[in-house]
Image 1 (cartoon, rainbow, N blue to C red):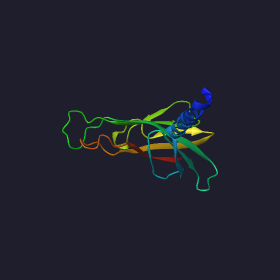
Image 2 (cartoon, rainbow, N blue to C red):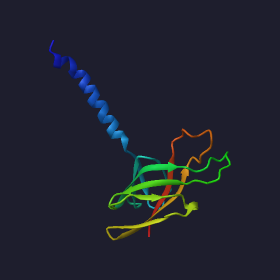
Image 3 (cartoon, rainbow, N blue to C red):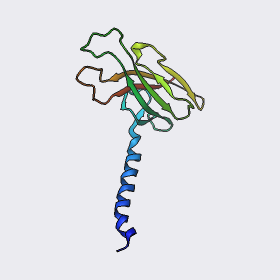
Image 4 (cartoon, helix red, strand yellow):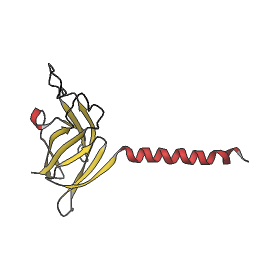
Length: 145
């Protein structure tokens, strides 16, 4: 039996698994409409359109950083949560923190002469000493202004 023929099934399996990992690394969380509350995890992307689905934008949550003081702990510093967004049509990433913290939120931007507002409402779940391994999610709204 040829050495290459023996390795071919293993190589096909490795390449297939590699493609699967790359394809799921940035998953699409679905389609939403402007003004709709959206909750997605990090490395997910959404398409936000008008009710008729005619035009829209793509937004990706590239990272979620949460250093807020756990609910069941007394802290000297409250900490904060940051979400990094990548918006198709905007050259730079946008970092926002939840609305109650007031930093750089909401973010107003323009694409193709249309004006939008991105508001980060929350990062969930709120930290406790027992939920440190739970996956963080960003809750936000994009509106046409």
